Image (cartoon, rainbow, N blue to C red; front, side):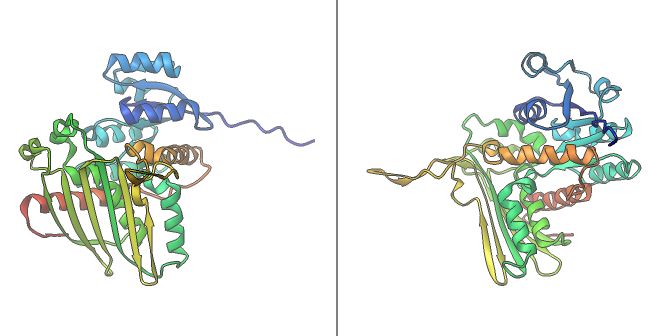
Length: 345
């Protein structure tokens, strides 16, 4: 007689932060990620907790993060909270015996990232993952695989951009005091991609420049709405990053990778679909409106990978040290923007 196999119980998850992206993560966990139960939600906003209970069916809701992180019926914590809270909340989750997923960046200061790494090293049985979602996008994954297979020879230059559609309300101007600046807020994904694609080399030098094209309120925060940066890596690799808050047509994430025997281009044209309209106004296609529309499937794949790692079904292909290096480079770029000087690592 064959042995009776008992199914592994679902991973029980608590989520902190139910804003725009947090709500999307919560919907994925509640309805689309296998082998999970979203059992707790935490937010300081009462209406978000009411919505979590009534619309997502989450049994336990609270404004007290400590209460959720120490709940005995929680196996893993998902953090979609303000960046200033990421490091301490990640540490709290690990020390409470929970796996933890934290949205990027891990922290705005390298010392805080290293503090998280040190605590994680004391809990090797816990999964700690930072949300670098582009690694889970099908197009970027395919490009990475092509490079590893030698399709374009030796990659030596990555040009990558994160450009948001202009928001006349200026939300990000109000957020600028805590965002860490345009490069930490917009370019961390590009920085991680460049390191990933180039084989995780050590950064040597960084230089950045920028301008305020529209949102003059950023000047009070020593920030810009359009920024350009160059990073030199050990071994001859280079990266060029462009970040913008002022695109008129939509959200446009694009990456170009130059190699010794060819190049790859991901995300050209910000196409929403394959429909191209030709009429008296010209030839055009619709554009993606924001980062979630562009990476909706990648967010799902990312969370599925986290759950699989927590359940011991697969290993992660990124580490906390990747997040630390992204912050290290992002901070150097930001310092260069403000000083006008080259930053040496």
